[in-house]
Image: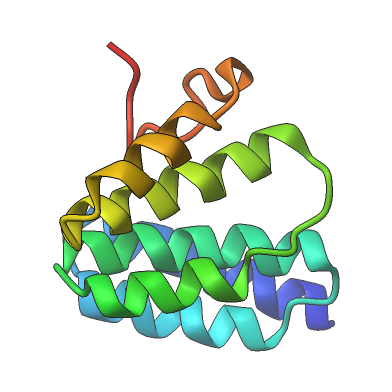
Length: 121
């Protein structure tokens, strides 16, 4: 039951995000995070929250989300997403050296997996 609730909130959040209703999407993603049963779900939900935070120009909130999700295991794509997210937050804070180091730590395996926040061109 818990998984169904988490999934429903996440899908509704993605729908609201696609419609441009960022505040509603944020609320739904935050509710979904309460029902995460695995660390992997928690990390991916935090990345969704991060993306909405960036779109709302709430970089302080985005930074907190990156910190919360920092210990998400050894999945190379997930770690690369977190490094890229941290780099974006550092760019906003005008900490260019840290941002550059974070972006350099992003694996090429990230590819097209995080295009809502960053692309390689």
